[in-house]
Length: 454
Image 1 (cartoon, helix red, strand yellow):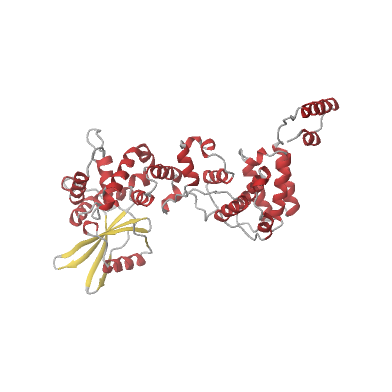
Image 2 (cartoon, one colour):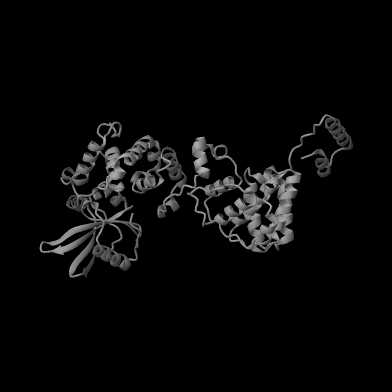
C-alpha cells in the first residue's frame, strides 16, 4: 500500500503527517517508497459487512451465509486478512459483480469460495482470464465444491485439484477438511500451513495435484481419512504406475482400515508387500489380493514369535507362493480347533431357506469360533482370520449351505459389514455361481441389505 492512501485512511497529528510526506518525497527522489502496514482486521471485516448489507436484507439466507463465511475466513490466517487498501477495493468490486448475478447458494461454504475468489482477484488481478465479464454475466448458480473448483480454474487458468479424500459433491465438510479446502483454494503451501502432516515436497505435490481418489467406503465418514490418504500417497509415490493395484490391496487390508497408525508406522513393510505383489503376485491368477493381504497380516501381526516380526526381505516367488498356498488351505486351523470356543451375539438376522432350480439353499449366521474355523477348513479360504472382527462386531459372517444327501454342506461364505455385503466366496475363494448369486440377492432383499462385492 502506498503512503498517499495510508494518509487518507488514518487521522494523524499534523507534524507526523508532514514528516511522513517529506520522507516520502525524499525517498521517491531515489526511486524508493515508504512501506506501510496493511489494513486493520476491523477495517477489512466491516468493509465486507457493509457490502453485504447493501445487497441483502439482514434476515435473508444469503446475508447469513456470506456473514458466516466471512467470520470463518477472518478467524484464521487466510488471504482476506492480508489485503491492503487497493487489494481490498478490487476484491469488493469483484464481489459486487458476483452479488449482482443473484447467485443461488446452497451453503455458506459456497459463499466462502466466492469471497476467496474475490480476494484472489484483489491480490492478483493480472491472472484473471479475458472471459471474466462474460463468465460473471452468465453465472447462474454454484451448488457444490466441484463447480467452485471449475469456476476457479476458468477464472484464473490454474490447475487446482482437490485431494481425493475430500468429496467434491458435498459441501458439509468437517472443520479440518474445510480448512484444507480453503488452503488449496488459495493455492497456499500445504507443507507450510500443515507442517504436522510431515509431507515431503513430492508428497505435498501429489497430495495437492495428484488427483488420487480414495476408494468409496462407508466407514470413512467416521474415520481420519487424512491419514489414510497420506499413506496412499506415500505408496503411490513409490509405484506411480500401479495405483489400481495399490487400491486393490488397501481395499483388502484390515490393518489399513481400522489401525491406520500401525499401518503408517509399518509403511516400509507395506512398500515391500506392494513391490512383491506387482513383481510376482499380480501375474499369478491363483493368488487374489485378499488372499495375499490376509496372509501378510496374519504372519506380520498375529503369528510373530518372540517379537521376531515377519518380513519380506529376500523372499522369492516360489517360497512365498508355497507359503501362501499352505496357509490358505490349512493355516493354523488344527491348533485353534483345540481351544475353547468363543461365541458372540449381535442383533439377529434370521436364517434364510430357499429353493432354486430344484436345489434347496440355507443361509445362516456363524456366531462361534469353532464353526468359523470349520468353515475356513471346509472351503479352504481365510475366513478364520476374521475372528476378531466378528467378536468386536465390525464384520458378520454367514454361511451359504446347499442341501445334498448328507444334509446342508457349505458352498459359500458371506461377509457383511453394517448393512453391506462385501464378499461371497466359495471353495478356494472362487466367485459364487449364478444360482448362488440369485440366492444371495433374495436374502439381501429380504433383510434390506446392499450388495457391493469387492
